[in-house]
Image (tube, rainbow, N blue to C red; front, top):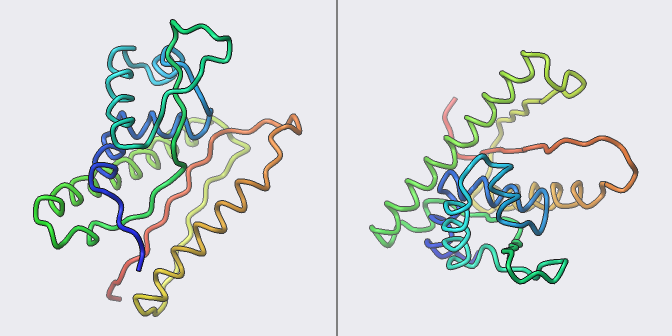
Length: 185
């Protein structure tokens, strides 16, 4: 049986600004608060507040300043990803409510990100990049659906680690999302 994420982790990460902070640290690595603030267009105080919330949930941790200057605040991720379902929290009504709201926030964020990409692409930004859509319909037991999830995570991890970012080629952040769930034709 899979380990269920603590609900505090799920609710911490699925706040819109905290999710952007998580994504920024995932892409750019250990970063200074002012750099995160500038990149996300948010106030330093707000970023610091949300970093502390993520720290309490065990998602980020303070990092040493590479220059040894103790007056600056640097942060790094404590973990690289999450796998969970709102159904994991069905036995605790308060947690189930929080999980469903986090799920809604996550789906909204995914759709918003896709819409922003479509708008940018249609406006001629990054014309050399084409996004893609992958859909599939098939049959599965609950165990087979969990296996599909594991295989996708493994494939994405292998793909990410296969990229040699020291080769001098231009790269942009790429977001991949998928949902797999029981359905009807």
